[in-house]
Image (cartoon, rainbow, N blue to C red; front, side, top):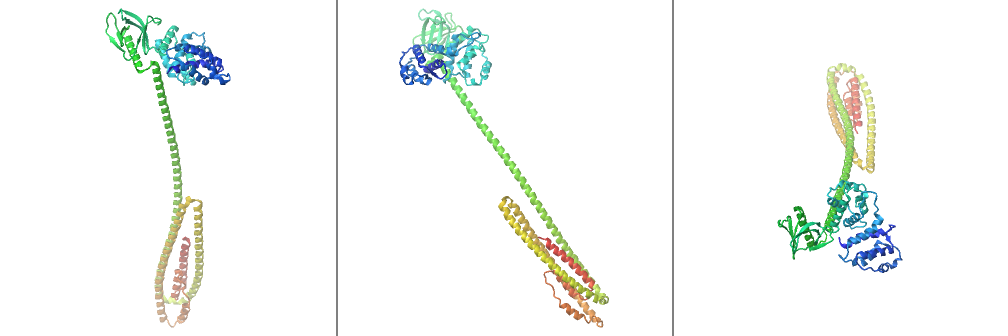
Amino acid sequence: MDLRSELLKSIWYGFTALDLEKSGKVSKSQLKVLSHNLCTVLAIPHDPVALEEHFRDDDDGPVSSQGYMPYLNKYILDKVVEDSFEKENVDELCWTLTAKKNYQPDRASGTVLPEKDAFRLWCLFNFLSEDKYPLVMVADEVEYLLKKICAAMSIEFNCVDLEDFFFSDASQQNGITVWVFLELMNSGKITRGVDKAIVSMAIEEVYRELVGDVLKEGYLWKKGQLRRNWKERWFTLRPSILSYYTGEDRKDCQGNIALDGNCCVEVLPDRDGKRCMFCLKTIAKTYEMSASDTKQRQEWTTAIQTAIRLHVEGKKSLHKDLKLKRREQREQREKRRQSKEEELQRLRALQEERERKLAELELLKEAQKQAQELMEQDEQRRRHQHEQLQKALEVQLREAEEARVSMQAEMALKEEEAERQRKRIQELEEMQKRLEEALQQEIKARLDEEAFRYAQAGLLAEEEEKMKALMNLQEEQEEYILKTQREKQELKQEMEAKSRALEEAQRQLEEVRANRHRVDQDVVAAQRKLRQASTNVKHWNVQMNRLMRPIGPGEKRPSLGSSFSSFQIPSQRDPGLHLRRRSGSDERGDEGKENVENSCDLEKRHSHTSNGDMDIP
């Protein structure tokens, strides 16, 4: 901290004391008085017209602190010569101006400090305050100053009271003003139970140490240079000089010892009845001194070495250097705190980002779970549809199996019928008697056969209509699939599954048709066997006719056979009807009752076959 900054702190209080309306401006007449007094205490010549010339365009209006600073720097502070004035006089001038306005303690209270102590505390506050306006002193510096004062009073400093004082008002977290500090000292919280004289002595000691740059003071025995006798003197140590006086009032100075890099301190052994001796060696002389005890000797030697070190380093004040170091430490702590806060904010941001990502992940999981549920539902629906289709196909397969079983049963019946025909040959005479009746029944059976044929034709037509309807349904289904694909793309897989199911059904239909074709082939084989049996029956009929020539009905048989030969054989489209017609033409001489039974069995088989064809999609 340079001399200009120290002076500006005191002058700032003087300028604000003249601002009675707290508008930040002071009249020129008051500034003239302030400037004249400052020039007087700073021992510089005062120019009475400089202020008017500097502010001649201001129309005699009030001047702000920013407007007064150029004049203050140019005409006052630039002319200041260090060590040509007493800074304490400048402080007393500014304190007198500001105390009248701002310092009004309760005189009735028993803990109010004397005016001199309040002035010294004000100077200490200015020394330790920050270089920012308005001036405040941070909590660390307040604690440092109070600890120094309590140490000087030989009492222990209670940090709890100070912490309570700062935390009681949130506005004081960044620092307190000098008036708040003086109010704290006058409240008696710090000096509770201590005599005022001791408090004053402690404040003076700290004032001289911090503001007066006194590193150490106290009585020492000094050995004379001429008489070589020992005398007790009051020594005052500053960074560049060690002075000694006859008494602690420091009125009669007996000498000054200049300290530089060529000086050194040595501890001496006890002699001449003196103990705890040490010497200070300079280029010109060696000064022998004696302390009261070993502790005092150690403190003095350390303090003198510190003064020599400060002079070598070019520093004029120990406590100014310590203050700068404490400020740097505070700034470093603040930087670390800010970096920690930034790190915490970054961590909070990362935590929030992590929580947001976790929330998004939870949402994605929930969406995936919902999609999985939808897929499971679709899968269950498709599975259900597949099961229904499989059941339908199983029903159709069972019906086809039943048709096959019925065909096998019919073939068994045909075989039994062939067996019965063989038995009938043995009973030929009895069968010949009922031949006419059998012929009538055969004619009736042919008529029934024609009716069955028309019925089958109607069934076939109905089957074709149903096939057309099935094709229409397939076309509608294809249109529906196209429409659904345009509207809902997500149902494409389901439609493809239905199409595959339809293709599977068509394939199964083809398989049923193939099975039907195989059954038809089996029926053809059966018809072939039946024709062979009918040929055998015809052969036996011929043999019987030869044996029974005299019988009349036997002579008419060729004409009846010719009429039968004119009957056209139906197409191969329905193997059942083809089989029925062949069996009817080959079995002319069989009984009519058995032909009717065969026709009924054939009709049942056709109905089973037709129903199987119609049920298959």
